[in-house]
Length: 352
Image (cartoon, rainbow, N blue to C red):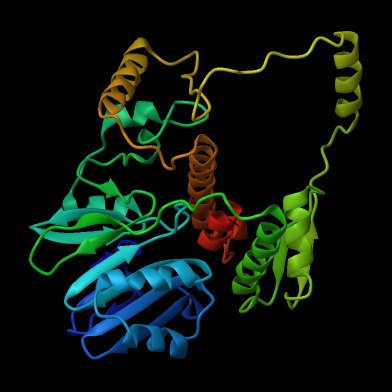
């Protein structure tokens, strides 16, 4: 079973081809794209740029859950994907964790959700206090601890994996995606990235009467605004201006008085920005975090990508994905959808 939120009155439900409840949660009608053929079915929940007829055509060619890879690699948007093929269930989110999957076991039955609290409520799991201390690290905990779930017995799906839920055995993650080789020429890559961003923006504007975007003047936000303008029924941009713009002038003057001495640059070998605990953290918290990092290092975890630059890109993308996921839950309470087109799978993959 896949739960998008704790079961409440008014929740929607998608039934498995067997007739049993399969997906329970709350979503807008335009966020659901599904198809079924006999005992097989596939569901996309979120922003997906594919019609139900095209999805049905792709489903007809699938013989196992591994055949869903082609759908995952070709679809634009940001969504949860669930498929039941040949009696096995596959569940996955997005590479950047904007759409994440958390899973656990209840009486030997695998359950998954887009929020760890939903799984914890079913498994009656408690909080791991040491992992709470880990969240004090700035800017974030190092890989793989950055994706550690705070609830005991609840696991987050690793990057590039889907959750395989066989009919008669426990759930396990299976890798379906690996970072691409950075071999595409710059000009070709720029054109491919533009088309990926166009598709990402179109998935957001297709069913929205009004789209609001940040227009800070930077390359990222400006590009999105120009892509959204011809596609949105109504585009509203906003720009944040500090209350005290004179601060920048005083900052430049102060920097000039300090002299031309350049700041020190970090030159040591590193795959990520080195994390640090806040000065007010207790010795017990620091010790707990140090032990967790040492234990993780002893396990010799694989990096997110073979190249340090790609590992860093994916690490930052996951951090942005988590922030976007949390922000979207807050804005959803006010009827707003918080979106980040740059974090779509196809955009991230193309940028690498």
